[in-house]
Image 1 (cartoon, rainbow, N blue to C red):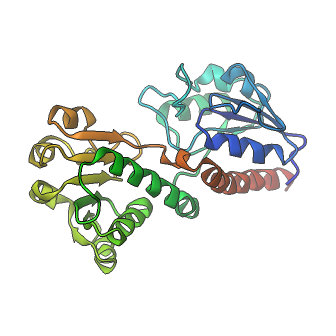
Image 2 (image 1 turned 180 degrees about the vertical axis):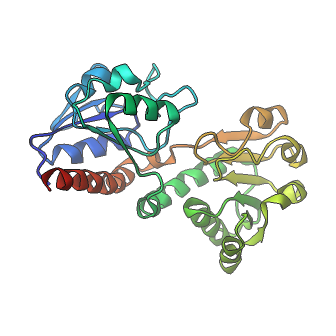
Length: 297
């Protein structure tokens, strides 16, 4: 794909964006980056901007992080000191008819994009890409679980809430490690799938009844299911790891107040930034190619 007449801005993110930027530069595009960790040796073919507005100036494409947007409307950028908020003023720097490719947009970004004529292209729900980066996310989640727990995963009673792409892979990996896994899912087909892999399965409304037997809980569902009575029912200290997209699936403050060990684990893909960055570029480049093809039609 030849993008020698285009500019790509990469704003926010973590180490994954380094690999994405490197691959973007190979297309021949002008590439500027801001808001993600910058390697000491730089990135060949990529310029480091001094602000989000500078990076986005005259850009045809902007690549925002896949992990999502905070409640305040800031892009995921864990190593950046100041929040990066892509408001109307910031987006107005882009070329007319430009595109932003990202995990997902909140209502504030959608409004800013509509006001500036920018098109948003989300790929958080791209199952192929989720499966490609899923193993790295699961590895990172297990690393956190081992670090924060006083018991071995082998033989431990572990609850996995949700059985989507990540929940399914996580549950199967835990079963292979010898954990006693219970998957909590609303969909009976998902529960049957979990059981076929050697896990127990239960409807979501049974979480509170089974909570006292759990030593660890992973949540992959972006709804506040681990809160209130469930937190009180869990044995203390229980390790609670939230992998769900914002607003998350665990009441972190409540968990801490009840003596549990809460871990916010969004952005686990940064554990293997080259692998995950390459998988994300597969989806990003595909979408850019579709836009370019439509422009030529």
